[in-house]
Length: 122
Image 1 (tube, rainbow, N blue to C red):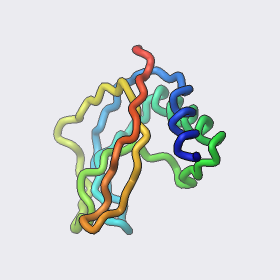
Image 2: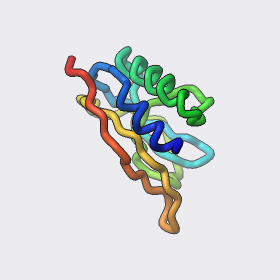
Image 3: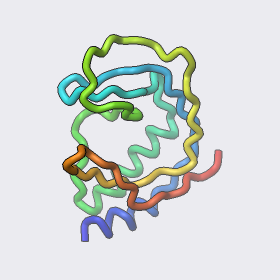
């Protein structure tokens, strides 16, 4: 029931598409996850995050307590991280968002998209 509620509530989110500049590498130390992130979070992404959190709150979905850190995971169990800049930023035109299920398997974590939702064109 909670999943059905989340899928329905996500459909109520009205947010605008945006461009995300992925321009730096970082690492979550304890889980050893290398990721590509942004040095400037666009206002439209902040808005989407807030609206989605509010919509999912209706379904009693537990929300992350840590500060929101938009990123793309590149590698798990990464060792030897040294801070570095991206030689050329990656510009990502974000036109939709998805609810994704994280599933632990014998081969590691798999991310399975459950449903995609369009964003309003900019």
